[in-house]
Amino acid sequence: MSHPVKIKNALISVYYKDGLAPLIELLNKQGVTFYSTGGTETFLRELGHEVVPVEDLTGYPSILGGRVKTLHPKVFGGILSRRPLEADGQQLQEYDIPEIDLVIVDLYPFEETVASGAGEQEIIEKIDIGGISLIRAAAKNYNDVVIVSSRNDYQLLQDILTETGGHTLLEHRKTFAKRAFNVSSHYDTAIFNYFNTTEPLPVFKQSEQQAQVLRYGENPHQKGVFYGNLDALFDKLNGKELSYNNLVDVDAAVALIDEFDEPTFAVLKHTNACGVASRGDLLTAWNDALACDPVSAFGGVIICNRQVDNATAEEINKLFFEVLIAPDYSVGALDTLTSKKNRILLKRKPVTLPTKLFKTLLNGVIEQDKDLVIEGPTQMNTVTDKQPTDHELSDLYFANKIVKHTKSNTIVLAKDGQLSASGVGQTSRVDALRQAILKAQSFGFDLNGAVMASDAFFPFSDCVEIAAEAGITAVLQPGGSIRDKESVDMANRKGVAMVVTGVRHFKH
Image (cartoon, rainbow, N blue to C red):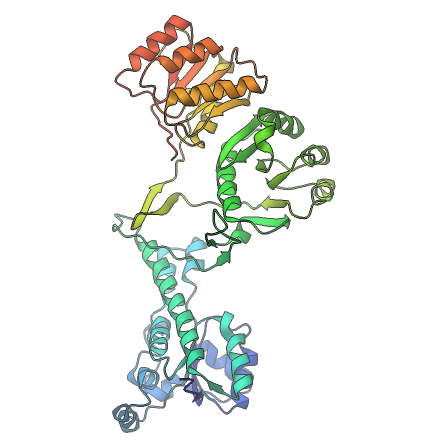
């Protein structure tokens, strides 16, 4: 089962040469013959090693500006020949083809070139042909050949060869093949997605090369893994590892806070905001956000859009919370907030987030555009006799931002740039409103002069009537019900201003 193979001949042609030299030195000591091309050939010679140019093996020079170097039967024959088959061995002898036992090849940096903003022609030239073919051939023939397709695997092979004296076992080669097919499939996915932007084919392809095993999923009996690069988004300054539920809440928190320009704090629980306030200074914003619902804030996720200063940190430190996210922290704030080792502190990095959302569902995947629309006062069309004041329009804009990021059915009540309360995830809009009113009253909020935002239209006039009786003076909704007139008429009778935006913000 172990099927040891001694490495005699190696084909080496890499873009990234850092970290390669120690492996080359070991292979040389073990008597391996090197075949190479171009810059890698020069690199090997500068290390003081003899190299057989691939051109000498094939009898052909590198042509077409380097596009064709290794695509030849004398290369691929040596890689793909099945050692146990006598007929394959006879053909290698007939055509003077050496067995190639090791292929060390990586790929042109296609993704990096796209990310750099390079022109199309430069990007196209970074689509590797020879390299990808060599990787697939060697990985296919893992029974007899070792494929190293990434500089990240140099050390792994070096450790194996040191331990075995230059041999690899079948299990080693199969592991390297698996890694190689991961490299090739990821590369092809990146190329496909680059081309699949105009008149896209109805195909779903995603590839994430990094993964983080989580403590568990939503519950301890569920396994959980995050695929992606969290280090690109945050510097984790303190605390335990993020859990599945932490990550879901962090995602919701980031999406919400990015709606605000003025100093703002938000507190979230189970992806819904239980406290939001925008103020002239961060400390006041924190105090007012916490005041929205200090009960739900316990154990929540907190986010702000300004550097956390010493005074604000002292106040936050009084609360038990799971995660705090900010663009930066003062030295004194960090000293205060890191006093408890398990609380997670994240420092955001300026990274552009994806504009597509997808999740598994039934036996497939659903994908949609991210909801990037938010309607401000200029998109609010008054449909009642009473016009909203500038202050009410400002509060409606504030409330609409929160509605957009709250589970449907939802109603948000706000006043003076502060969340008064919200009704979250209810099966009826009336229930959502009653929940919000009751919650606001339980925390002592005066709803006289407050505003109300709804994530979808009112099918009946009852919500407007209930809101008016609670003291609400202005209402925002998308409109679009066949019974919109009933809600407008009720608003007129109650002296409430109503605006419609034409945009629904369901969030399921």
